Length: 343
Image (cartoon, rainbow, N blue to C red; front, side):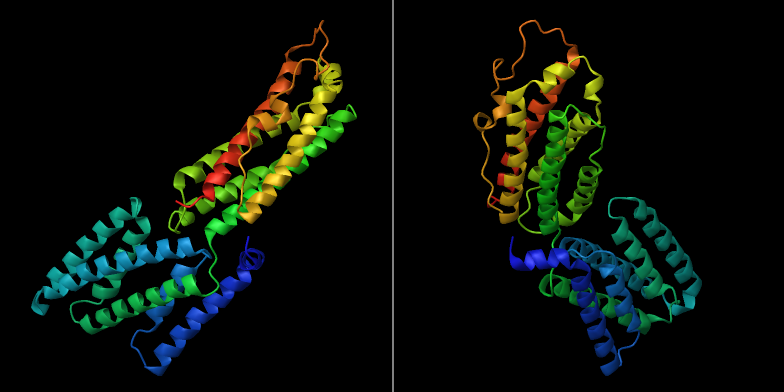
């Protein structure tokens, strides 16, 4: 990961505030220097687009909907001025009907664009048929402020949701290694205190929230992102089951503790999580093959399993959870490698 990307991830809020300060400062300077009528609508536009969205993808998506909604609302609002002033009641009834129609579509897919259209209709035509000049200035201020905000988000300390997603994937792998290593240590001591991998779930939820913003950014493979999240959820479920089960209360406890080959294979997988995390950070991931993962190649002799095994199903459940984690790890290495391949 580039030095700037690391810096941007660590200081997201600082860079966001610098970007906001620049945009709002330029808008204030321009509106005051040139005495632009209704200049405060430019400020409102910048605040609504930049508010709570530090990522380029989010800004582009929101700005696109705002501009689209503004243009549609402006056309509809300006169309009302074609009604002669002497029929002002017709203007008001038509205004009310169009506004209600725009609000209806705020419950559809492009809710924000519809909301902006409704607001623009109010801005343009809400003052009645004699407010044409104000309508034109308000539309102008919304459009130029939106363009300025987009350019600032792209070229001034840009924060990309894609980079945040990659960073969280790296953190997810590191946390997997830590949780798994701790479990291995407890297993060697014959202790299985129940615990939970809450941090993994938090990371997954954050990554999920980044997907809509990433879809707008360039060079993103949507299918790969979905695969990564799906595998992460499976790994979380399996690791959570491994950590939360009180294995010392199961009949298979002695067999679990005596599997020397399994312990070595578990340690290798824990180390592999760390290696993959480093590769993700460097954006150069090497796919892992099943032949290179010991957990998937253990034999009966390596497990030190007795021929007269009388343990209950927990013994086999424990083996399955570890093997399934190894299998999901291999899949994660493959989709992570695909994420960095040029499309």
